[in-house]
Image 1: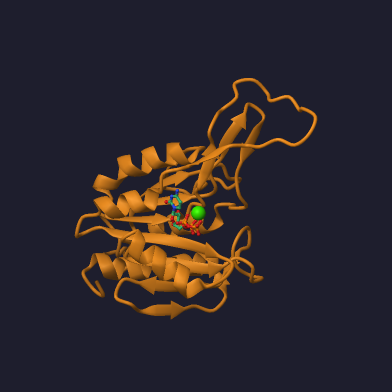
Image 2: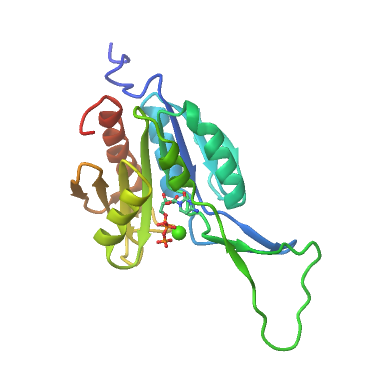
Length: 227
Ligand code: CTP
Ligand code: CA
């Protein structure tokens, strides 16, 4: 009796989640990456599917199996993630960008393994494109855009800056230096900043519970509340 829209509030909605790190190749044996494990993004994808959404998970290299019922698109670099995210955006109702996208990529990819030389070495890097910013620029009225912000200081200032600069509806921020939060843990301690200026400081919760809170907010926004 309870399998209707109440239990599946995201039924008929297309939700795109990006997760994990990106890898920027230097040569065939080396890359630049970060500590993201994909746990938060995979928890979100699982939760969105449980709430009835059609979920597309655009994932960098992680060790977690795809959640059941979620269609997964595997990518490596920031450039590949950009392509897939922009392709998926027009039909998405909401995009949740948990991925820890590399801000820089090597200016040159060496086709052969770089051999060591005497003395120090400089690696030239160039900026990657900001995916969230690109989506924010293309966002339509009905679409909900959620970004993440991993910070080590000035959480309010940096998170609100990202919310505004990237035209997001919500930024989920956490201080990655606090224990029980951030990379690789099963729990997180986040603060949610919304476009309406509100701020929700959540206690330590499992990443699955954090995913539930975020998606309940997304559902409310999609249904035209607190926008
Ligand atoms: N992001 C993105 N594309 C990038 C960099 C970041 O889509 N090239 C997204 C992340 O997925 C996240 C949000 O932007 O949802 C914030 O990422 P973060 O690294 O915290 O912010 P930056 O704008 O890159 O700023 P900085 O790293 O200098 O703090
Ligand atoms: Ca960054």
